[in-house]
Length: 228
Image 1 (tube, rainbow, N blue to C red):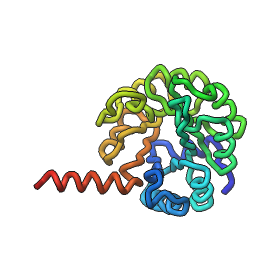
Image 2: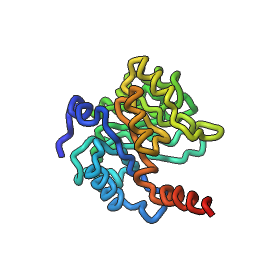
Image 3: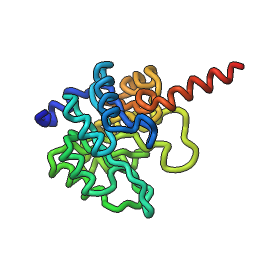
Image 4: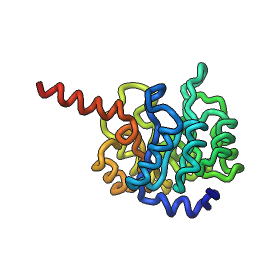
């Protein structure tokens, strides 16, 4: 598939659902061909775009779909809490594998590569840049650096107990500041995803509730057990 123009990408995903096809790590569904099948099924269901982790998963998925793909690589580093696309080489590999948008951790935590270098590399490779942020300060900083999309992805995941509700206020504040906003993080029902768009998000990403079968079954199994 020839790469979409940036305008075409935004036209395609505006006010749309992004399906994050990330199976549980090392689980039975954590295989490139299954991720590609998840992606195709998500599009049949109405997803406007995809979020795919890992170069091999992206390579397996890209030839099978014609919607915009957000590419990421997750790493566990010994000297940094940053996990999402931490290295410039990761950005190059994702671009070469066919990502339209490349997302990086946009938090202001110790990191191997500064955010200025990351966004510059993404743009040099012809891709759109997305920053996965945890608060308004980070989002505004990434906006100033030139990131095309700012996500609420990391809100609630940088320390302490993870909230149950999505961070609606962050989405509202980012939008009020003029950001192009991806609502992401705990939008795990159709109603919550709808709310994200209603409060100003340009697009909303849903992951576990769509593609992590172990989690979904666990929610139902726990509910059934609690009825005894």
